Image 1 (cartoon, rainbow, N blue to C red):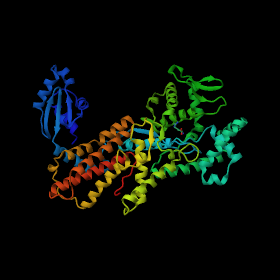
Image 2: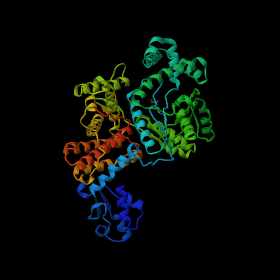
Image 3: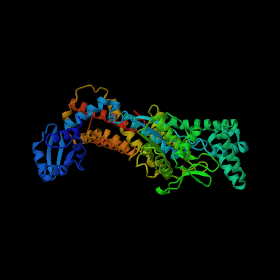
Image 4: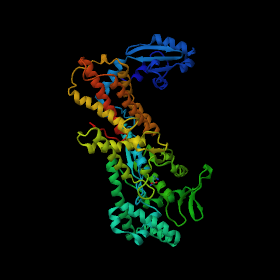
Length: 563
Ligand code: ARG
Protein backbone atom coordinates (compact mmCIF):
# COMPACT_ATOMS: atom_id res chain seq x y z
CA UNK A 1 0.00 0.00 0.00
CA UNK A 2 1.24 3.47 -0.88
CA UNK A 3 0.29 5.73 2.01
CA UNK A 4 0.35 8.88 -0.03
CA UNK A 5 -2.24 7.40 -2.39
CA UNK A 6 -4.26 6.26 0.60
CA UNK A 7 -4.19 9.79 2.05
CA UNK A 8 -5.30 11.20 -1.30
CA UNK A 9 -8.11 8.65 -1.62
CA UNK A 10 -9.42 9.38 1.85
CA UNK A 11 -9.51 13.11 1.11
CA UNK A 12 -11.16 12.49 -2.26
CA UNK A 13 -14.13 10.86 -0.52
CA UNK A 14 -15.06 14.29 0.83
CA UNK A 15 -13.93 16.87 -1.68
CA UNK A 16 -14.46 17.73 -5.31
CA UNK A 17 -10.89 17.64 -6.64
CA UNK A 18 -9.17 15.18 -8.98
CA UNK A 19 -7.13 12.49 -7.23
CA UNK A 20 -4.02 13.69 -9.05
CA UNK A 21 -4.54 17.27 -7.94
CA UNK A 22 -4.94 16.15 -4.34
CA UNK A 23 -1.88 13.97 -4.61
CA UNK A 24 0.25 16.87 -5.88
CA UNK A 25 -0.88 19.05 -2.97
CA UNK A 26 0.11 16.53 -0.29
CA UNK A 27 3.26 17.56 1.57
CA UNK A 28 5.73 15.82 3.84
CA UNK A 29 5.81 17.93 7.03
CA UNK A 30 9.19 19.23 8.12
CA UNK A 31 8.91 17.76 11.66
CA UNK A 32 7.57 14.37 12.83
CA UNK A 33 5.32 16.06 15.46
CA UNK A 34 3.38 17.47 12.52
CA UNK A 35 2.54 14.04 11.17
CA UNK A 36 3.70 11.99 8.22
CA UNK A 37 1.64 13.69 5.55
CA UNK A 38 -0.04 17.07 5.43
CA UNK A 39 -2.75 18.43 3.20
CA UNK A 40 -3.06 22.22 2.87
CA UNK A 41 -6.65 23.37 2.42
CA UNK A 42 -6.00 26.68 0.66
CA UNK A 43 -6.98 25.47 -2.81
CA UNK A 44 -10.17 23.91 -1.47
CA UNK A 45 -11.03 27.17 0.14
CA UNK A 46 -11.59 28.72 -3.31
CA UNK A 47 -13.83 25.88 -4.47
CA UNK A 48 -15.77 25.49 -1.24
CA UNK A 49 -15.93 29.20 -0.37
CA UNK A 50 -14.95 28.60 3.24
CA UNK A 51 -11.89 29.52 5.28
CA UNK A 52 -9.16 26.87 4.96
CA UNK A 53 -8.93 26.24 8.71
CA UNK A 54 -12.67 25.57 8.87
CA UNK A 55 -12.36 23.08 6.02
CA UNK A 56 -9.45 21.41 7.82
CA UNK A 57 -11.49 21.10 11.04
CA UNK A 58 -14.45 19.59 9.21
CA UNK A 59 -12.37 17.13 7.23
CA UNK A 60 -10.51 16.02 10.36
CA UNK A 61 -13.75 14.86 11.92
CA UNK A 62 -15.26 13.32 8.77
CA UNK A 63 -12.39 11.34 7.28
CA UNK A 64 -12.17 7.57 7.65
CA UNK A 65 -9.24 7.00 10.03
CA UNK A 66 -8.52 3.34 9.35
CA UNK A 67 -4.76 2.62 8.99
CA UNK A 68 -4.03 5.95 10.64
CA UNK A 69 -3.10 6.57 14.23
CA UNK A 70 -4.88 9.92 14.07
CA UNK A 71 -5.80 12.73 11.69
CA UNK A 72 -5.69 16.27 13.08
CA UNK A 73 -6.07 19.79 11.87
CA UNK A 74 -3.45 22.39 12.51
CA UNK A 75 -4.63 25.76 11.23
CA UNK A 76 -5.27 25.39 7.49
CA UNK A 77 -3.48 22.01 7.38
CA UNK A 78 -4.85 18.54 7.77
CA UNK A 79 -2.13 16.36 9.34
CA UNK A 80 -2.06 12.60 8.93
CA UNK A 81 -0.27 10.38 11.43
CA UNK A 82 0.02 6.92 9.95
CA UNK A 83 -0.44 3.83 12.03
CA UNK A 84 3.26 3.19 12.58
CA UNK A 85 3.01 -0.53 12.98
CA UNK A 86 0.85 -1.01 9.89
CA UNK A 87 3.14 1.29 7.94
CA UNK A 88 6.33 -0.54 8.89
CA UNK A 89 4.85 -3.96 8.25
CA UNK A 90 3.60 -2.86 4.88
CA UNK A 91 6.81 -1.41 3.65
CA UNK A 92 9.00 -4.25 4.92
CA UNK A 93 6.79 -6.80 3.20
CA UNK A 94 6.79 -4.81 -0.02
CA UNK A 95 10.58 -4.46 -0.10
CA UNK A 96 11.07 -8.17 0.53
CA UNK A 97 8.50 -9.11 -2.07
CA UNK A 98 9.85 -6.82 -4.81
CA UNK A 99 13.51 -7.59 -4.06
CA UNK A 100 15.91 -6.27 -6.67
CA UNK A 101 13.04 -4.47 -8.38
CA UNK A 102 11.96 -2.62 -5.26
CA UNK A 103 11.94 1.12 -5.92
CA UNK A 104 10.98 0.95 -9.56
CA UNK A 105 7.60 2.11 -10.79
CA UNK A 106 8.39 1.36 -14.46
CA UNK A 107 7.57 4.96 -15.21
CA UNK A 108 9.63 5.01 -18.40
CA UNK A 109 8.15 2.08 -20.27
CA UNK A 110 7.82 2.68 -23.99
CA UNK A 111 10.22 5.63 -24.04
CA UNK A 112 13.60 5.62 -25.78
CA UNK A 113 16.41 7.56 -24.17
CA UNK A 114 19.92 8.03 -25.49
CA UNK A 115 22.60 8.69 -22.87
CA UNK A 116 25.92 9.84 -24.21
CA UNK A 117 28.75 9.83 -21.68
CA UNK A 118 32.45 9.23 -21.08
CA UNK A 119 33.57 10.08 -24.65
CA UNK A 120 37.32 10.35 -24.08
CA UNK A 121 39.71 11.40 -26.82
CA UNK A 122 41.79 8.87 -28.69
CA UNK A 123 45.54 9.19 -28.13
CA UNK A 124 44.99 11.37 -25.07
CA UNK A 125 44.76 10.37 -21.44
CA UNK A 126 41.45 9.47 -19.87
CA UNK A 127 41.37 12.10 -17.18
CA UNK A 128 39.43 12.82 -14.00
CA UNK A 129 36.86 14.83 -15.95
CA UNK A 130 36.15 11.82 -18.15
CA UNK A 131 35.67 9.79 -15.00
CA UNK A 132 33.11 12.36 -13.86
CA UNK A 133 31.00 12.02 -17.04
CA UNK A 134 31.43 8.26 -16.84
CA UNK A 135 30.14 8.13 -13.26
CA UNK A 136 27.15 10.37 -13.95
CA UNK A 137 26.26 8.76 -17.27
CA UNK A 138 26.54 5.24 -15.93
CA UNK A 139 24.29 6.09 -13.01
CA UNK A 140 21.72 7.82 -15.23
CA UNK A 141 21.71 4.77 -17.46
CA UNK A 142 21.13 2.51 -14.44
CA UNK A 143 18.29 4.61 -13.11
CA UNK A 144 16.60 5.02 -16.46
CA UNK A 145 16.69 1.32 -17.26
CA UNK A 146 15.51 0.54 -13.73
CA UNK A 147 12.48 2.73 -14.40
CA UNK A 148 11.83 0.85 -17.63
CA UNK A 149 13.16 3.34 -20.19
CA UNK A 150 14.64 1.75 -23.27
CA UNK A 151 18.10 3.21 -22.88
CA UNK A 152 20.99 3.36 -25.36
CA UNK A 153 24.46 4.15 -24.02
CA UNK A 154 26.77 5.90 -26.47
CA UNK A 155 30.47 6.55 -26.13
CA UNK A 156 31.03 9.48 -28.51
CA UNK A 157 34.77 8.91 -28.78
CA UNK A 158 36.89 11.87 -29.79
CA UNK A 159 38.45 9.93 -32.65
CA UNK A 160 38.34 12.41 -35.52
CA UNK A 161 39.64 15.88 -36.29
CA UNK A 162 42.70 17.82 -37.43
CA UNK A 163 44.66 16.60 -34.42
CA UNK A 164 44.87 13.16 -36.01
CA UNK A 165 46.64 14.67 -39.02
CA UNK A 166 49.13 16.24 -36.63
CA UNK A 167 49.53 12.95 -34.82
CA UNK A 168 50.29 11.11 -38.05
CA UNK A 169 52.90 13.70 -38.91
CA UNK A 170 54.38 13.45 -35.38
CA UNK A 171 54.37 9.67 -35.60
CA UNK A 172 56.33 9.70 -38.83
CA UNK A 173 58.95 11.96 -37.34
CA UNK A 174 59.46 10.97 -33.74
CA UNK A 175 57.73 7.79 -32.59
CA UNK A 176 59.46 5.29 -30.33
CA UNK A 177 57.79 2.02 -31.40
CA UNK A 178 58.74 0.17 -28.27
CA UNK A 179 57.28 2.85 -26.03
CA UNK A 180 54.17 2.94 -28.19
CA UNK A 181 53.48 -0.73 -27.56
CA UNK A 182 54.26 -0.50 -23.86
CA UNK A 183 52.50 2.70 -22.86
CA UNK A 184 50.60 3.79 -25.95
CA UNK A 185 48.79 6.81 -24.58
CA UNK A 186 51.86 8.23 -22.88
CA UNK A 187 53.88 7.88 -26.09
CA UNK A 188 51.15 9.31 -28.32
CA UNK A 189 50.80 12.23 -25.94
CA UNK A 190 54.57 12.77 -25.94
CA UNK A 191 54.83 13.01 -29.72
CA UNK A 192 51.69 15.15 -29.91
CA UNK A 193 53.11 17.64 -27.42
CA UNK A 194 56.42 17.59 -29.31
CA UNK A 195 54.57 18.39 -32.51
CA UNK A 196 53.14 21.53 -30.93
CA UNK A 197 56.52 22.61 -29.56
CA UNK A 198 58.21 22.07 -32.91
CA UNK A 199 55.39 23.76 -34.83
CA UNK A 200 56.03 26.94 -32.90
CA UNK A 201 59.51 27.11 -34.43
CA UNK A 202 58.48 25.65 -37.76
CA UNK A 203 54.91 26.63 -38.73
CA UNK A 204 55.03 24.54 -41.91
CA UNK A 205 54.45 21.52 -39.70
CA UNK A 206 50.89 22.74 -39.19
CA UNK A 207 50.33 22.53 -42.94
CA UNK A 208 51.74 19.05 -42.98
CA UNK A 209 49.33 18.05 -40.19
CA UNK A 210 46.38 19.54 -42.03
CA UNK A 211 47.40 17.72 -45.20
CA UNK A 212 47.48 14.41 -43.37
CA UNK A 213 44.03 15.00 -41.95
CA UNK A 214 42.78 15.76 -45.43
CA UNK A 215 44.27 12.44 -46.56
CA UNK A 216 42.58 10.72 -43.67
CA UNK A 217 39.22 12.23 -44.53
CA UNK A 218 39.66 11.06 -48.11
CA UNK A 219 40.40 7.52 -46.98
CA UNK A 220 44.12 7.36 -47.83
CA UNK A 221 45.24 3.82 -46.99
CA UNK A 222 48.33 4.61 -44.96
CA UNK A 223 46.71 7.43 -43.00
CA UNK A 224 43.68 5.30 -42.20
CA UNK A 225 45.85 2.36 -41.07
CA UNK A 226 47.80 4.58 -38.67
CA UNK A 227 44.65 6.19 -37.31
CA UNK A 228 43.12 2.75 -36.74
CA UNK A 229 46.19 1.67 -34.85
CA UNK A 230 46.09 4.73 -32.57
CA UNK A 231 42.41 4.12 -31.99
CA UNK A 232 42.81 0.44 -31.13
CA UNK A 233 45.73 1.07 -28.80
CA UNK A 234 43.76 3.77 -27.00
CA UNK A 235 40.61 1.68 -26.73
CA UNK A 236 42.58 -1.11 -25.14
CA UNK A 237 43.68 1.30 -22.42
CA UNK A 238 40.21 2.79 -21.97
CA UNK A 239 38.68 -0.66 -21.68
CA UNK A 240 40.89 -1.44 -18.72
CA UNK A 241 39.26 1.46 -16.92
CA UNK A 242 35.75 0.54 -18.00
CA UNK A 243 36.30 -3.04 -16.83
CA UNK A 244 37.46 -1.82 -13.46
CA UNK A 245 34.37 0.35 -13.12
CA UNK A 246 31.93 -2.18 -14.56
CA UNK A 247 30.90 0.29 -17.26
CA UNK A 248 29.82 -0.66 -20.77
CA UNK A 249 28.24 0.91 -23.86
CA UNK A 250 25.77 -0.10 -26.54
CA UNK A 251 27.43 2.01 -29.19
CA UNK A 252 30.99 3.19 -29.67
CA UNK A 253 30.11 5.44 -32.56
CA UNK A 254 32.65 8.21 -32.07
CA UNK A 255 33.20 11.31 -34.12
CA UNK A 256 34.77 9.35 -36.99
CA UNK A 257 31.54 7.40 -37.45
CA UNK A 258 29.96 10.50 -38.94
CA UNK A 259 32.67 11.11 -41.53
CA UNK A 260 30.60 9.79 -44.43
CA UNK A 261 27.37 11.31 -43.14
CA UNK A 262 28.43 14.92 -42.76
CA UNK A 263 27.94 15.98 -46.38
CA UNK A 264 24.24 15.22 -46.26
CA UNK A 265 23.89 17.25 -43.08
CA UNK A 266 25.68 20.22 -44.65
CA UNK A 267 23.47 19.96 -47.75
CA UNK A 268 20.40 19.94 -45.55
CA UNK A 269 21.45 23.13 -43.75
CA UNK A 270 22.23 24.68 -47.12
CA UNK A 271 18.82 23.76 -48.56
CA UNK A 272 17.13 25.17 -45.50
CA UNK A 273 18.99 28.41 -46.11
CA UNK A 274 20.65 28.81 -42.75
CA UNK A 275 24.30 28.56 -43.86
CA UNK A 276 26.25 31.77 -44.44
CA UNK A 277 29.72 32.26 -45.97
CA UNK A 278 32.14 33.86 -43.56
CA UNK A 279 35.82 34.24 -44.55
CA UNK A 280 35.54 31.11 -46.66
CA UNK A 281 33.92 29.10 -43.87
CA UNK A 282 30.29 28.02 -43.75
CA UNK A 283 28.57 29.10 -40.56
CA UNK A 284 25.15 29.49 -38.98
CA UNK A 285 24.74 33.01 -37.63
CA UNK A 286 23.46 33.04 -34.07
CA UNK A 287 23.92 36.68 -33.03
CA UNK A 288 20.17 37.01 -32.66
CA UNK A 289 20.50 34.52 -29.82
CA UNK A 290 23.57 36.21 -28.36
CA UNK A 291 25.92 33.48 -29.46
CA UNK A 292 28.92 33.43 -31.78
CA UNK A 293 28.32 31.69 -35.14
CA UNK A 294 28.26 27.90 -35.23
CA UNK A 295 31.01 26.88 -37.65
CA UNK A 296 29.85 24.00 -39.82
CA UNK A 297 32.58 23.79 -42.47
CA UNK A 298 36.03 25.34 -42.01
CA UNK A 299 37.58 27.55 -44.69
CA UNK A 300 39.81 24.67 -45.85
CA UNK A 301 36.71 22.55 -46.35
CA UNK A 302 37.39 20.33 -43.34
CA UNK A 303 34.82 19.37 -40.75
CA UNK A 304 34.94 20.50 -37.14
CA UNK A 305 33.69 19.35 -33.72
CA UNK A 306 30.24 20.93 -34.25
CA UNK A 307 29.90 19.37 -37.73
CA UNK A 308 30.15 15.97 -36.12
CA UNK A 309 27.73 16.83 -33.32
CA UNK A 310 25.08 18.14 -35.70
CA UNK A 311 25.39 15.00 -37.82
CA UNK A 312 25.36 12.75 -34.76
CA UNK A 313 22.18 14.31 -33.36
CA UNK A 314 20.33 13.80 -36.66
CA UNK A 315 21.61 10.27 -36.95
CA UNK A 316 20.53 9.42 -33.40
CA UNK A 317 17.05 10.79 -33.94
CA UNK A 318 16.66 8.56 -37.00
CA UNK A 319 18.27 5.51 -35.51
CA UNK A 320 16.84 5.58 -31.97
CA UNK A 321 13.75 7.81 -32.25
CA UNK A 322 14.60 9.24 -28.85
CA UNK A 323 12.26 10.83 -26.37
CA UNK A 324 15.38 12.45 -24.86
CA UNK A 325 19.01 12.56 -25.94
CA UNK A 326 21.21 13.31 -22.96
CA UNK A 327 24.78 14.60 -23.29
CA UNK A 328 26.87 14.26 -20.14
CA UNK A 329 29.69 16.70 -20.88
CA UNK A 330 31.60 19.23 -18.74
CA UNK A 331 30.25 22.71 -18.15
CA UNK A 332 33.01 24.25 -20.27
CA UNK A 333 31.04 23.05 -23.31
CA UNK A 334 27.75 24.76 -22.48
CA UNK A 335 28.14 27.26 -25.32
CA UNK A 336 29.01 24.54 -27.83
CA UNK A 337 25.83 22.60 -27.06
CA UNK A 338 23.68 25.71 -27.07
CA UNK A 339 25.01 26.48 -30.56
CA UNK A 340 24.44 22.95 -31.80
CA UNK A 341 20.92 22.67 -30.36
CA UNK A 342 19.95 26.11 -31.68
CA UNK A 343 21.24 25.19 -35.14
CA UNK A 344 19.14 22.01 -35.11
CA UNK A 345 16.12 24.05 -34.12
CA UNK A 346 16.74 26.58 -36.89
CA UNK A 347 16.98 23.67 -39.32
CA UNK A 348 13.38 22.93 -38.35
CA UNK A 349 13.93 19.93 -36.11
CA UNK A 350 11.34 20.33 -33.40
CA UNK A 351 13.02 17.48 -31.49
CA UNK A 352 16.00 19.79 -30.83
CA UNK A 353 14.21 20.57 -27.55
CA UNK A 354 14.65 16.93 -26.53
CA UNK A 355 18.45 17.20 -26.66
CA UNK A 356 19.75 18.03 -23.20
CA UNK A 357 23.23 18.91 -22.12
CA UNK A 358 23.97 17.74 -18.58
CA UNK A 359 26.96 19.80 -17.45
CA UNK A 360 29.16 18.99 -14.48
CA UNK A 361 31.86 20.70 -12.46
CA UNK A 362 35.63 20.72 -12.35
CA UNK A 363 37.73 18.27 -10.38
CA UNK A 364 40.39 19.56 -8.00
CA UNK A 365 42.73 17.90 -5.58
CA UNK A 366 43.24 18.75 -1.93
CA UNK A 367 46.32 16.60 -1.80
CA UNK A 368 49.31 17.88 -3.80
CA UNK A 369 50.68 14.38 -4.22
CA UNK A 370 47.57 13.38 -6.08
CA UNK A 371 47.87 15.99 -8.71
CA UNK A 372 50.48 14.70 -11.14
CA UNK A 373 52.73 11.99 -12.29
CA UNK A 374 53.79 13.15 -15.72
CA UNK A 375 52.70 16.46 -17.10
CA UNK A 376 49.73 18.05 -15.43
CA UNK A 377 47.04 15.44 -15.88
CA UNK A 378 46.17 12.95 -13.20
CA UNK A 379 46.28 9.51 -14.68
CA UNK A 380 43.14 7.79 -13.85
CA UNK A 381 44.63 4.39 -13.43
CA UNK A 382 46.81 5.87 -10.70
CA UNK A 383 43.81 7.36 -8.96
CA UNK A 384 41.83 4.12 -9.05
CA UNK A 385 44.66 1.82 -8.07
CA UNK A 386 45.70 4.08 -5.22
CA UNK A 387 42.15 4.08 -3.84
CA UNK A 388 42.15 0.28 -3.92
CA UNK A 389 45.62 0.03 -2.34
CA UNK A 390 44.77 2.42 0.47
CA UNK A 391 41.53 0.59 1.22
CA UNK A 392 43.38 -2.71 1.27
CA UNK A 393 45.74 -1.30 3.90
CA UNK A 394 42.82 -0.29 6.10
CA UNK A 395 41.16 -3.68 5.73
CA UNK A 396 44.36 -5.55 6.57
CA UNK A 397 44.69 -3.46 9.69
CA UNK A 398 41.06 -3.67 10.83
CA UNK A 399 40.05 -7.14 9.74
CA UNK A 400 43.14 -9.23 8.98
CA UNK A 401 41.14 -12.46 8.76
CA UNK A 402 38.71 -11.31 6.10
CA UNK A 403 38.50 -13.53 3.02
CA UNK A 404 38.74 -11.98 -0.49
CA UNK A 405 40.43 -8.86 0.85
CA UNK A 406 41.47 -7.80 -2.66
CA UNK A 407 37.99 -8.04 -4.07
CA UNK A 408 36.51 -6.17 -1.12
CA UNK A 409 39.18 -3.46 -1.39
CA UNK A 410 38.42 -3.06 -5.08
CA UNK A 411 34.70 -2.61 -4.53
CA UNK A 412 35.10 -0.26 -1.58
CA UNK A 413 37.99 1.76 -3.05
CA UNK A 414 36.52 2.31 -6.49
CA UNK A 415 33.10 2.79 -4.97
CA UNK A 416 34.54 5.52 -2.76
CA UNK A 417 35.68 7.46 -5.81
CA UNK A 418 32.37 7.06 -7.66
CA UNK A 419 30.54 8.07 -4.51
CA UNK A 420 32.65 11.23 -4.20
CA UNK A 421 31.76 12.18 -7.76
CA UNK A 422 28.06 11.60 -7.21
CA UNK A 423 27.63 13.01 -3.73
CA UNK A 424 26.99 16.67 -4.55
CA UNK A 425 24.97 18.34 -7.26
CA UNK A 426 26.89 17.69 -10.40
CA UNK A 427 27.55 21.31 -11.32
CA UNK A 428 29.53 21.86 -8.14
CA UNK A 429 33.29 21.50 -8.41
CA UNK A 430 34.77 18.51 -6.61
CA UNK A 431 37.74 18.46 -4.31
CA UNK A 432 39.32 15.05 -3.95
CA UNK A 433 40.74 14.40 -0.54
CA UNK A 434 41.96 10.88 0.21
CA UNK A 435 41.33 11.04 3.92
CA UNK A 436 37.80 12.25 3.57
CA UNK A 437 36.86 10.10 0.60
CA UNK A 438 38.07 6.80 2.09
CA UNK A 439 36.91 7.45 5.63
CA UNK A 440 34.40 5.04 7.16
CA UNK A 441 32.73 7.96 8.89
CA UNK A 442 30.93 10.89 7.37
CA UNK A 443 29.00 10.92 4.13
CA UNK A 444 31.18 8.56 2.14
CA UNK A 445 30.96 5.41 0.07
CA UNK A 446 32.76 3.33 2.72
CA UNK A 447 30.33 4.58 5.39
CA UNK A 448 27.34 3.30 3.44
CA UNK A 449 29.11 0.10 2.41
CA UNK A 450 30.00 -0.53 6.04
CA UNK A 451 26.39 -0.04 7.15
CA UNK A 452 25.37 -2.64 4.58
CA UNK A 453 28.03 -5.15 5.62
CA UNK A 454 27.15 -4.65 9.26
CA UNK A 455 23.45 -5.23 8.61
CA UNK A 456 24.22 -8.21 6.44
CA UNK A 457 26.42 -9.78 9.08
CA UNK A 458 23.53 -9.66 11.56
CA UNK A 459 21.47 -11.63 9.07
CA UNK A 460 24.31 -14.10 8.58
CA UNK A 461 24.67 -14.54 12.33
CA UNK A 462 20.94 -15.02 12.79
CA UNK A 463 21.05 -17.92 10.34
CA UNK A 464 17.33 -18.66 10.50
CA UNK A 465 14.77 -15.95 9.89
CA UNK A 466 11.89 -18.09 8.81
CA UNK A 467 9.88 -17.73 12.04
CA UNK A 468 6.73 -15.65 12.44
CA UNK A 469 7.46 -11.91 12.69
CA UNK A 470 5.39 -9.90 15.12
CA UNK A 471 5.38 -6.50 13.46
CA UNK A 472 3.08 -5.06 16.11
CA UNK A 473 6.15 -4.90 18.32
CA UNK A 474 7.99 -2.50 16.00
CA UNK A 475 6.81 0.51 17.94
CA UNK A 476 9.96 2.51 18.53
CA UNK A 477 10.79 5.82 16.94
CA UNK A 478 13.97 4.43 15.34
CA UNK A 479 12.19 1.49 13.75
CA UNK A 480 9.50 3.69 12.30
CA UNK A 481 12.00 6.28 11.03
CA UNK A 482 14.02 3.54 9.31
CA UNK A 483 10.90 2.05 7.70
CA UNK A 484 9.85 5.51 6.56
CA UNK A 485 13.26 6.05 4.93
CA UNK A 486 13.00 2.71 3.13
CA UNK A 487 9.70 3.85 1.71
CA UNK A 488 11.38 6.76 -0.10
CA UNK A 489 13.46 4.91 -2.72
CA UNK A 490 11.07 5.22 -5.64
CA UNK A 491 10.47 8.89 -4.97
CA UNK A 492 14.22 9.51 -4.98
CA UNK A 493 14.72 7.58 -8.21
CA UNK A 494 11.96 9.51 -9.97
CA UNK A 495 13.23 12.83 -8.70
CA UNK A 496 16.82 11.98 -9.68
CA UNK A 497 15.59 11.16 -13.19
CA UNK A 498 13.52 14.32 -13.41
CA UNK A 499 16.55 16.44 -12.46
CA UNK A 500 19.05 14.11 -14.18
CA UNK A 501 20.93 14.33 -10.92
CA UNK A 502 22.37 11.12 -9.39
CA UNK A 503 23.30 12.98 -6.19
CA UNK A 504 19.65 12.80 -5.16
CA UNK A 505 20.02 9.06 -4.90
CA UNK A 506 23.44 9.26 -3.26
CA UNK A 507 22.00 11.50 -0.53
CA UNK A 508 19.09 9.13 -0.17
CA UNK A 509 21.27 6.10 0.47
CA UNK A 510 23.29 8.08 3.02
CA UNK A 511 19.99 8.74 4.84
CA UNK A 512 19.17 5.04 4.81
CA UNK A 513 22.57 4.15 6.26
CA UNK A 514 22.18 6.83 8.95
CA UNK A 515 18.69 5.64 9.88
CA UNK A 516 19.94 2.08 10.08
CA UNK A 517 22.85 3.03 12.36
CA UNK A 518 20.50 4.97 14.65
CA UNK A 519 18.21 1.96 14.87
CA UNK A 520 21.04 -0.47 15.47
CA UNK A 521 22.68 1.68 18.12
CA UNK A 522 19.41 1.91 20.02
CA UNK A 523 18.12 -1.68 19.83
CA UNK A 524 19.33 -5.21 20.31
CA UNK A 525 18.44 -7.74 17.70
CA UNK A 526 19.88 -11.19 18.20
CA UNK A 527 20.04 -11.43 21.96
CA UNK A 528 16.42 -10.72 22.79
CA UNK A 529 13.90 -13.13 24.29
CA UNK A 530 10.87 -12.18 22.26
CA UNK A 531 11.10 -14.34 19.13
CA UNK A 532 8.36 -12.45 17.24
CA UNK A 533 10.07 -9.11 17.80
CA UNK A 534 13.45 -10.57 16.90
CA UNK A 535 12.17 -11.85 13.57
CA UNK A 536 10.39 -8.55 12.88
CA UNK A 537 13.64 -6.67 13.46
CA UNK A 538 15.56 -9.11 11.29
CA UNK A 539 13.05 -8.55 8.49
CA UNK A 540 13.48 -4.83 8.88
CA UNK A 541 17.23 -5.33 8.55
CA UNK A 542 16.80 -7.57 5.55
CA UNK A 543 14.68 -4.90 3.89
CA UNK A 544 17.32 -2.29 4.74
CA UNK A 545 20.00 -4.38 3.03
CA UNK A 546 17.83 -4.73 -0.06
CA UNK A 547 17.23 -0.99 -0.25
CA UNK A 548 20.91 -0.09 0.23
CA UNK A 549 21.90 -2.63 -2.40
CA UNK A 550 19.35 -1.39 -4.93
CA UNK A 551 20.33 2.23 -4.33
CA UNK A 552 24.07 1.66 -4.52
CA UNK A 553 23.64 -0.35 -7.71
CA UNK A 554 21.83 2.59 -9.23
CA UNK A 555 24.84 4.81 -8.66
CA UNK A 556 27.22 2.15 -9.98
CA UNK A 557 28.50 0.57 -6.75
CA UNK A 558 28.58 -3.10 -5.81
CA UNK A 559 27.93 -4.00 -2.18
CA UNK A 560 30.21 -6.32 -0.24
CA UNK A 561 28.66 -8.99 1.94
CA UNK A 562 31.35 -8.82 4.61
CA UNK A 563 34.10 -6.42 5.52
N1 ARG B 1 35.63 14.15 -26.50
C1 ARG B 1 35.17 15.33 -25.85
C2 ARG B 1 36.12 15.72 -24.71
O1 ARG B 1 36.84 14.90 -24.20
C3 ARG B 1 33.82 15.17 -25.27
C4 ARG B 1 32.74 14.82 -26.26
C5 ARG B 1 31.43 15.28 -25.81
N2 ARG B 1 30.34 14.87 -26.60
C6 ARG B 1 29.91 15.48 -27.71
N3 ARG B 1 28.85 14.96 -28.32
N4 ARG B 1 30.47 16.55 -28.16
O2 ARG B 1 36.13 16.88 -24.32
